[in-house]
Image 1 (cartoon, rainbow, N blue to C red):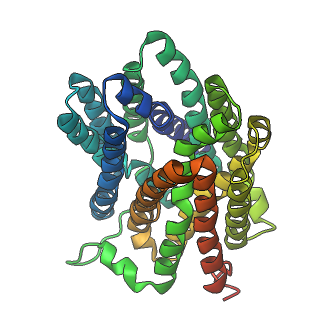
Image 2 (image 1 turned 90 degrees about the vertical axis):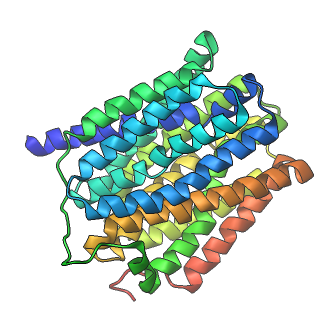
Length: 380
């Protein structure tokens, strides 16, 4: 019974911690435009936030790895992001807003990676629990958009802050994960780079994650080019994000027949096929009808990459390995893909963006095969 209660708390933690992303990611550009910022200024603000997340991931990962009160660290980060979101409503001055938004990402950027570490270290069923995050994101995308449409875009930050406040309360009720002490020596990310397989995986991840996140930005352009409406974009995101949860939920059963390493290989290959198909410029009906492709690819990648990164290092390094993965493999990749994607959009339309995405993921696929990362330790 106690184990069931722990799992329910973890479900709630992931649901509420991913709601803010579902509120913010699809609507932040529209909010910034509504308060008078240009497209270039919007790009600078969002890029600064992601860049801050790279630094913050290394900082908070080291703090988390070296303290015994790990739940408190996560709760402080939730609270910090919530406070900075509310503070951002106080200004419409570009430079000041950019600084506040960066501070918000200092707390928000690494917090989901630390939640992953907490669940994995506590031996929770990560794939199943992570599916609650996909549900939270999908629900927030749909309902926050409706609420903001009726009550104003500025309300997204109030919803964002409220969800993180609930998450901060829940995480303090989670079980404290183990703390690995080393005599007169603090855990450092530099130790990770002595692990050849981790470094190879991190580089490979760099060519995977940016496109998955970049798709959230550029899919709307592709959908409109295919004849879709603005309201249709909201429905598409609800279906795509919502489809991730069932595939995450199924991963433990699939792993009994297919190893995590080979499952990742299949998912990366499908990413290449998916974005290559998008690059042909399909109509909005075909885009809507193939929503489940995101569920398969993201459902596998978002779970299995985290598990893989934590598995190839010593247990005492697992938390900092996961946050470094988010900082470099995820956030740094997002910056590159967002910037190049924007240039491709201007030069070749949305189809050009997805041609680039397909090529970017092809590099990851080739590396994954050549470096034999699809082999488990037992097969190596």
